[in-house]
Image 1 (cartoon, rainbow, N blue to C red):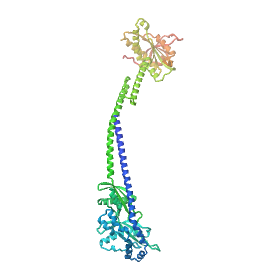
Image 2: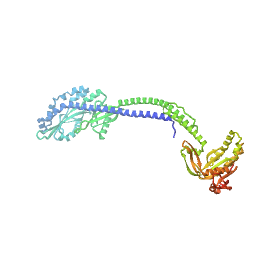
Image 3: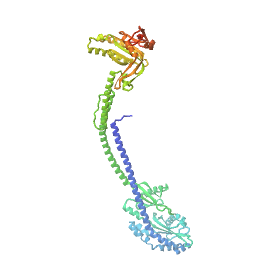
Image 4: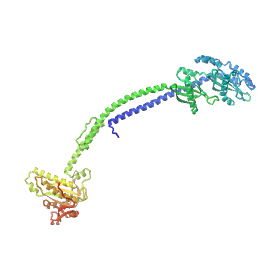
Length: 604
């Protein structure tokens, strides 16, 4: 996996943040614009449908009354009973001839900017049909004619079939829409009022009056004048409209039929592209629970404005986003430079500390958290340097193992009983040798001597207890036992003799040493006070080792009986005469250590 720098990560984070905010803003804005336009279209469609209903009531309101009056005419009832169709139509035509609504249709057409052909056909387009008790159409004077009129009559009969089936169920006047084929082959839309005629005594259905007038929607023309909304009436897979272009009616009608066939609600909406322009279509059923064929009010709204608004907002948001990305890029570079430089310095500082350079310091460039971090690093480095100095000094005045145990808090004031081996090493004839020697030379000689011997003690896992003048004291088995502490002590003693001989070959001071070793139980621990401690061992075995060292001749290693027994066959030792030592009531059995069989002395 590629490791990215802090600066690159910051730049990527800033750009991803801006890109994410931009994407979310574009998404929310687009949804908001779509919802706003959809709500606007819905409100306009509802207003249009309500206006259509009110205009329809105005158009047909003056026709319903005369039709209801004719339905109450006893003369018309008797004529229907006799089946005298000519008399029936004569009564109906005379009864409706004075209706002002029919006479005023020509003026209404002019006011609605209808064409001359539409205006001329208004009066002639009035449609009257009578149905008998069975629902059959009574022949009328205008039903005679050629094949074209017979075709139109069959179409009319088919459309009235549903009315015929519902004859006995008609409780009130029914309003619906029918399409009528004209002599020129075209069809026009009729608004139809069906009025039931019943016997005054038995209330049995005698027939029905069907009155239709050519449909010319004033609301459609008003919308056409005020806006670009396209609307019309959809009936039997055909759209009747003055605002919907003829070239797109077929496509719109096909899509609308698919929506209705799919079981949509009586009022719904869908998107459609007409003549290359995205549109939003709304439709609503106008005659629910009617025996007439279902008719839908259809309105089509152009989405071009909404899309243009979305595109303008998109460009504006993208423009602001590009500016924001550039600003974020510049700001990120500035911030990352202000952060990465101190961080690189801190990384370099930590690498220096890891390599052992505790004198390294990093510059404090600010007063913020990064500056505080740099200051803390400098304080840490200074503290580590001071601790390292303390540890170095401690190692110089105490054995490393003891010093480490003290630093770790493993040693406290007090002692414990341990079985160890104690080694004393002393220079033979030191006092006469240094009697007339300058002090500086004495110190130089002792430092050379003790440095070499101390190294040997450490190589054999011994702990240097103390220096007393020309005497060296070492312990084996405390504070930590190595399991072969007595053997280590024996090996160390012979190695000290060898090391001194090597040193005599190069040094201007020829020294001879004697060594004493004793093994047994002692008290080991920190002696002194709570603010000044000294790790050492106390006991009879320590005194014995010191006395044996005093008895050892130059180049001789003297060990006690316990040490001899613990080492067994691993060494060669020669018994010495019983020793009468100061501080011991009985004579001490001692041996001269000659050789350790498991260890070969070699020149280094």
